[in-house]
Length: 400
Length: 148
Image (cartoon, rainbow over all chains, first blue to last red; front, side, top):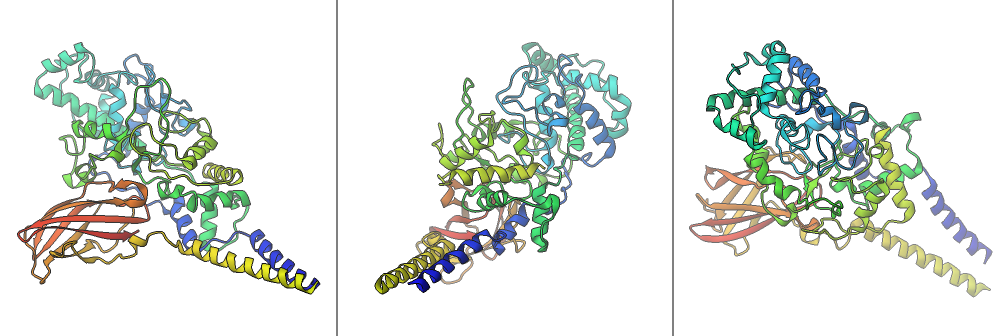
């Protein structure tokens, strides 16, 4: 009897010890962890649609413009009003506030140039055409392209011409005009000649191309997770600031395993760059937001999209737009998978700041509630409280 | 006393066996991906009208990148099918979503070869690629399983 009990005890002890040992990763898990490390991020591809994308002068001008409040109707809003440099280029608010309050959360900018689609719904298809959109949005910078062209000529004329070549004659261009603004601005735009409109559009586009050149330099920093991943890949014991705690490792294993987070949050930026309905509840007191399904027509209609006449280089760069998915129920309330780098220190979460904590975000994914419109792609996942905490603990390692 | 010991030993053994079976089931993902197990890249269409082969144009597929596939269509007798109309669709059956892009046949390369551009796989897992083919011989459909 004693012998039997001893055998049983030995069995259970061995099993327990195996569990307590330093967590082992299977080869498949190791490969997945390696695919998430910052070192797996490929070099930034050239942007042939913007021939100034890697021009240092354009990036320097773009940096100046990014922080310039004069680039707005009331000289009160710059890109950096919402994309705050000291706050991962976001603003900690549920909804961005420019001249007015918008309906969406400001997105951080680390690694933004690796995207194919911009904004939460992908309504723009290049970094430079994205940069133009808030400039004329009445809730953001609220300005107009004619005023911006005049301002660039007056304030940055020489710098501009060194990069982009001669500025057009703007002497007969109205002070305020755009096809998108107030009735008066639209009327002024309609009264301009085709040449004048093209002149103004070119200066406007170059503002976007300069800002994009600057934004291409914004890259995520190495984190504790990346150092851990490096050690795991090399087979070395993680040391000092490369160590993940037992709980964090458990969270990592859940992230790439049973919790299936890595399905969409994949690659070194923790995003597949695509759009998904994950059953996020609508924000209170906002009009319905249908996400990707409504953005498709907007990017197609954008005169500054890749297939428009303001693109540099050839149309072979326009594959994403040419082969864009335009229909399907899964585009309803689909929003872009956000990067998770640095996520723990920038609540609130989701496209309209619906969740105040990562715990709420994790709960929404695991509980997989039905979507108010369309169909969620999420399936419920059963995790204990400890496992949920472990997931959150792991996410924090992506920001240190 | 001795019989109690035997019971205990039996219980211990039974638990170990059960644990082993459960682990094997868990690791093998038993019951999942049954439909995805056939990942052959040459298949007959549903009604047997055509034989269809597919291959990525550049050999390998990188997750998240737009890329092209080459498709070869022949009759069941092996004759190249010329100037067929091919509609491309598909998706991930386990995630309730279709393809993230709208791939299209952009070129007929002759001898039954076609190029599909605009393919993109945004995540790992079981994908399906469905080709609906219309030619002189009629219309038929084939579904390929792709494991990424």
